[in-house]
Image (cartoon, rainbow, N blue to C red; front, side, top):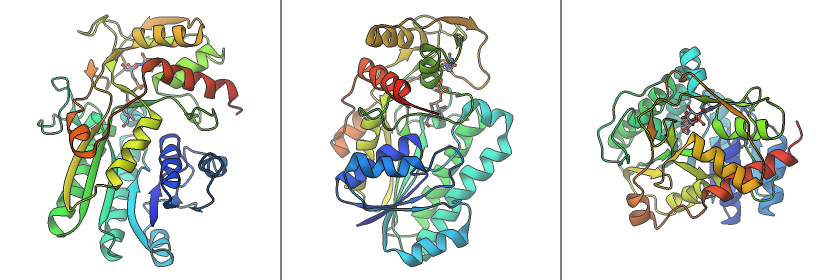
Length: 332
Ligand code: WQD
C-alpha cells in the first residue's frame, strides 16, 4: 500500500517514514528540502532496511507537481507533515507561515478529492489549544492561538474538517503533537534544523557540544512549578508509532488525537534531566520571556490510548540520551 508523506525528509517525518516502511508500506516522500536534507532519505532506507521509498523534491503548494505524483502512483492515504514550525519565526514572518502551511493543506486536500484518495492524516499541534486549562483535551474549546504558527494549524484543522463534512467517506485524522524531541537510537536521524535552532532541545544539545556558549532560558516568571515554561516532551519514535496506529484505524469523518505523554516538564527540569542522563553540565542564563510563548502545555492522553491502543512509552532520560547521541554523531 502506497502512502504519500509530505515533508518526509524532515526530522519527525523521517521517523514516521521508517515506521511505515517497517510495517511494509511503500512510502512516497514529497519534500522541498527547505528545512531538511536529501541525505535523510538514504538514512530512512538504511534504518528501515527497506528500499520502498520514492522521493520527489516538490513544494506541496504546487498543484501540478502533486498531480504528477497522484497520476503516477496509487496513493492509499496521505500524511501531511510538511510545514514551517518555529513559533518565534512565525511571529516575525506571518505571511510565510499562513501561505505555506494553509495553502499546502488546501492544495493537497484538493488533490485527494480529485484523485479519490479518502484518507488524510494531518500533523497538527498542541498550539491550537492556545492559552487553555491544562491538561489539554481534544474536546475542549480552542482559544485563539498565541502565534501565527498555531493559527495556521487551527485553520488547517478547520479546512480539513469542512472537507470531510462535504465529502462523505473522507477520513481526516488531526494529530495534535506536543513537543517532539529525541532522535532515532542509532543517532542517524535527529533534529538538525538549518541555521540557529528555535526549539529547546536542539539549543540544549548545541550548548552541551560547545557550539553555543550558554542556553537562554526564556523567562522564569511564569505561574509554573519553577517559573519556567512547562511542556509535554514526547520521544519522536513514540510520535512516529502514533502515526502508524492512526493509519491502521482510519474511518470516515474527523478524528482528533493528542500525541503527548501527559506529563509536563519545565525548562529547568529538562536541563537537569539532560545533565543527569548524559553526565554533562549545561550552562544557562535566565533572560526575558519569548513573545508567543504560553506558560503550560501538556496533554490529556486518554483518547489515543482508548481508541488507538497507543501510548507514549519512552521517558525523559531516554529522550535526552537519544538527542545527545544524535548531536555527538551529527556532522554539519
Ligand atoms: C519549549 C520551551 C520556551 C528555546 C514547539 C514547536 C512547535 C510545536 C510545539 C509541534 C518554552 C523554552 C526554548 C530556548 C527556552 N511543535 N525555550 N530557550 O515553543 O513549545 O513549540 O512545540 O507542533 O512547532 O516550536 O517549543 O522547544 O521552542 O520551547 O527557554 O532556547 O522551552 O520558552 O517554554 P514550543 P520550544
